[in-house]
Length: 445
Image (cartoon, rainbow, N blue to C red; front, top):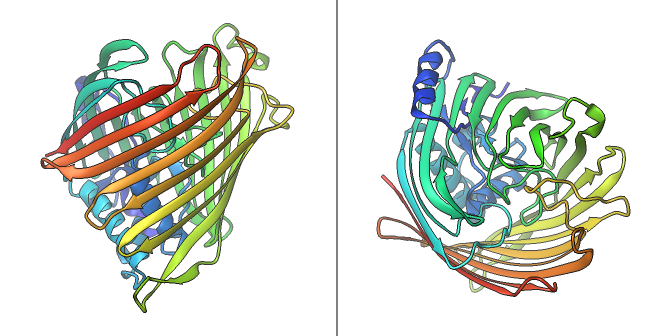
């Protein structure tokens, strides 16, 4: 089995200080062979995810990359033991992911503060959105040890018209080698998509959940991971949400995920026939890399790219409700790493809306194109355009939106500054077009 299993891949929790102290006491009873503990790579940075996908498509890592938070244990050995590649795209990706992993293991940047202000809440544009709040401020403290990890985050913000104190992004995890137990309120992203997600994404605020996961490796499944969670959303149309997911990478060029979800009805949760169920499968096929020449230079670089798909059922788990197809490719141009993402989501004639606010399943049709640029000076730019259509069940009208979003991230004032500008054109009788501008700042110390 992967020796990486010895790394402590901790899962996250959202807790009070009393619960944290209790967890620390309990964790002292746990014994693992690991010398250090690490959390996972979270669902909050599209550029770090892009680097990880480069390593996956180039064959550097042998684990799946279709589930976030993604335990460091799945690919830590590959990052640590593989020599630095001669290809500039892969070398830069190795350094970035290795630095992030070591920062977690060495407790760098344990404390942080975060601020955001905007004229309107930004539309959900996909993986790794900086903030869902109209405005807010938060502070957090994180600690990683051999058999446990925790982060306590508290903040005050305005979200969907409500102003209140929140504990989002807090967690507690207990590690037992290949097993990991966690409680928390963290964004999750299950699936291959970047702008779309038919399974479980991070379009709305994460719900508090408790989860358990296990990592394994064998000849049949390659490196694999199974996780199950139970969440308790506030003010939702259902009491509880249960989701179980299995991911595997049996070949260097192929990975997949299987997911089964149940939403327990508020009124008749004891009757299984009244609960909403959904089954989904996603997969990625890595395509052969393409050699290209740098302009004005005899050196060669490569385009690493892949195609992927997600299929999600209706309430009848034997019927297909929606399909997502996508292509993503990355190349280094004059020291800048550029990723292009093309996606299309289509519904079937059996499609019906589910009450899953953290996915794009309810859309009937949607198309998107996105560009992620990682510059050599640590500045990052993302640009996206998305056209979506859906049937409004309340107004019984067909609706359409066109959303253009630009984000710029740069190091400044000893921290990271986030700038956002977007425009949403609505083709409905009740909604006006919207321009959103945002400013955010994050500082770690």
